[in-house]
Amino acid sequence: MKQKQRHSKLLELLYDFSRIEVNELSRCLGVSQVTVRKDLDTLEARGLLRREHGYAVETRTDDISSRLALHHGIKQVIARTAAQYVNNGETVMIESGSCCALLAQELATTKKGITIITNSAFTARYTGTFSNIRIVLLGGEFQPISQAMVGPLMRECAQNFHVDKLFVGTDGFSMETGFTGENLMRCEAIQEMAKRATRVFVMTESRKFHQQGVVAEFKPEEVSVLVTDKGISPSLTDYLSSYMEVIIAEE
Image (tube, rainbow, N blue to C red; front, side):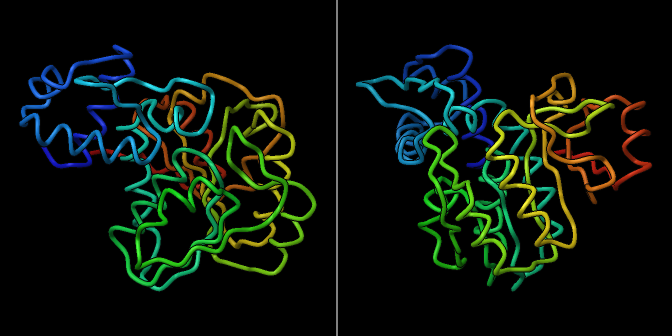
């Protein structure tokens, strides 16, 4: 099992059990306890779990770190698929969110000479140890839960740039409204960033199509590419394909 797959499986196990022994993780993952401890050190440094003596413990709250751990494996596959659309040496915009943070990490580990313009302090920190990418963090009002920059100053900062691709997440979808979010200021930030991009890529798990946020984010015709998993229904795929390219991410 490769390291990324192992990390995803470890986080899924932790989400299911909340607290799990190192020796049990070793058995479930089929690796030594030394390897498990190294994995736990890495994931704790990223804020995805907490270590106690002989145990890994989840940090389930509503913040970005906890959302990143939820369905980590699916999100990682989506991020890996989206990364294929980015070329070496390219400058892209990446919004805040769990799939977005994993995309930034994927670009940092598989591409060369990438510049990421983001409003996410979490993404900037999450990829800050990689020396082969350049991060431009947009200023603004800091939202502690999402660890994102929002507000008038952030919108003003975004106006200084233009890129070919913007990558965003979403909190839900409805046929009447389109893609939706849960936070007004964050949606306003995303919409301003979209004005500075030629194409908008939405990355989301298929489960998000069974829920709806409270704030309108994008109409279907405003999205160029959707990257999601195979759980999306064929009827919805057909509907969305009339507006955008729909990419089903698979292992």
